[in-house]
Length: 114
Ligand code: FES
Image (cartoon, rainbow, N blue to C red; front, side, top):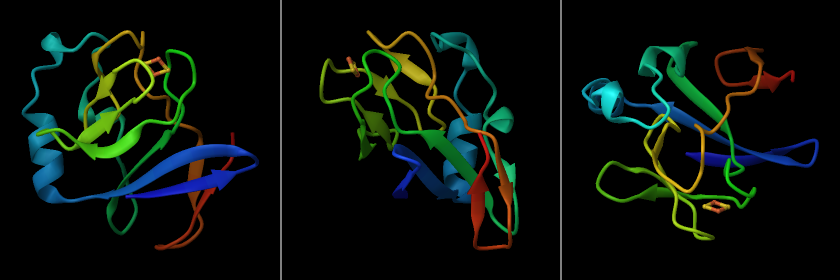
């Protein structure tokens, strides 16, 4: 997972492994506070990529990566958890980490467009 800055905003970019995708798909979306299937959050280029805005949906802190047994993100400011797909698991954040609009420029380059 890498963190990039694009036009002053931080984003997480993660090349999802098959194991991560399987783990995320095994999550019962009914247990999530902001349900969204994993397939909606992962795009296929040559690999399967997940890109999320790296601002917590509570008050905008930058979560830390690879935290906890589900390998997701943890916000150090007030303790919100997001899973490996950026879906909210625990508040006070009210929603998933948002996915920006982006396109694949090549197999290794991604352009964030909005
Ligand atoms: Fe992330 Fe408050 S800013 S939990």
